[in-house]
Amino acid sequence: MQEIKVKTHPSSALLKKEDQLAWKIAEIAADKSRPSAETIEMVINRIIDNASVAIASLNRKPVISARDMALAHPKKNGATLFGVDPKFKVHCEWAAWANGTAVRELDYHDTFLAADYSHPGDNIPAILAVAQQKKIDGINLIKGILTGYEVQVNLVKGICLHEHKIDHIAHLGPSVAAGIGTLLKLEKDIIYQSIQQALHTTISTRQSRKGEISSWKAFAPSHAGKMAIESVDRCMRGEGAPSPIYEGEDSVIAYILSGPDKEYTVPLPNINEEKKAILETYTKEHSAEYQSQALIDLAKSLNKKIKDKSLISKIEIHTSHHTHFVIGTGSNDPQKMDPKASRETLDHSIMYIFAVALEDGNWHHIKSYTPERANRKSTVELWRKIETFEDAEWTKKYHDPDPLKKSFGGKVIVKMRDGSVISEEKEVADAHPSGLRPFRRSNYIEKFKNLTEGIITKSESDKFLKLVQNLKNLKARDLVNLNPKIKKNLINKKYQNNSIF
Image (cartoon, rainbow, N blue to C red):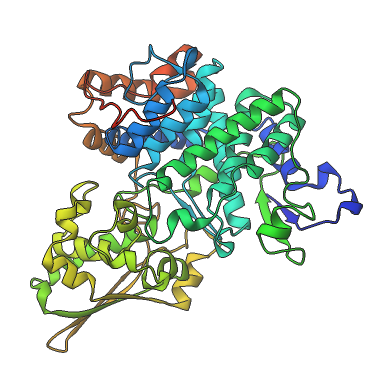
């Protein structure tokens, strides 16, 4: 690996493009690295994972809205949509919009946490949509996806957006643009300009994940994917971008991030070195913010040990800075304690999540979030007894540079009315690569079958699973079937017709 030093330069310095981060990213996007059997297998796993959660969300309102917008932009030789017969195609940027929203809606796909946050699987809908429209084969789709993961994971390692209240999709725009560059085998200069445009057009504030969280949380990554496709298209036509996008004196580092005095270090593979960052990422067994995964497993364990939850007087969760301030009481968001809060808010409240998992001894992507469940009297009482605390040791483990040592859990102290105390801790979720039962191909397939049961036919399920597991050998014509269709007449239509498209 190489370590790229990135800081602001005055315009008078005339920083060479070869010394800019966007160019360094373009170099690896345009290189000749070859995927290994291990990384190819993980790409397949993540395509299965995305399809699972996308199909399960197809009749949720944000997904219906995004799909209807896409259906208003048909294109004969375009890209396909989750749930829709592949004979009907739309413009690839609108397919990226609809499919990306479906993937993101349930907050149930893969994650990578370091200096910042990310869901690297958000790269896949946009890259796949372009592959379908441009008639790219399976092996080149794999290469494009691996570049997307590589770029996003390493930007997340090197540049923290959260401390400046910038949403994490600012790392997704550049990664999708780079992945499309690999996919289409574009020249370095085109990829370089595309990365810069994609970043410039996808910077937004973190308010989309603060307070009363709305459906924009699901739309945000698909918006980044759509913007990245459009950025690449413009640059393929010879257009340029604001430059240097990271290092310019009026650009991202100088005025949006830590300013002219800050130097960031972004790791990247050497040119032609295998892109393996996807292997550092991890998916979710439970439909909730990733930092709650280990704590859900811990709550399920405590469910069996604490028979009468009404005898609990207080629960303390000692955890990392990120967990405390993003989904814990450190966020100071009253909405995270409100039974009438949106689903998007509840899945970012570890107090709610832990209370439900402790009471039920289980977690479900739909049942655990219903208004009836959130308003249950015993749950609200237990919920209000939970408080989180930042613990320096857990923060240190959260940021450990060794992916095998990173921890995203915490220590839970349950205080009972009789004065007794139950204390347990868990470092990583059971499904994490370092957990008790790491997710394997069989687990991804089981998740797919569970989430799509009753929504797609068995023959459609079998066809998709057979096809995707042969991804490296697929011809371009086969890729249109990687967005499974659901049972006839099962897709809901518009909620209302008062729209532009």
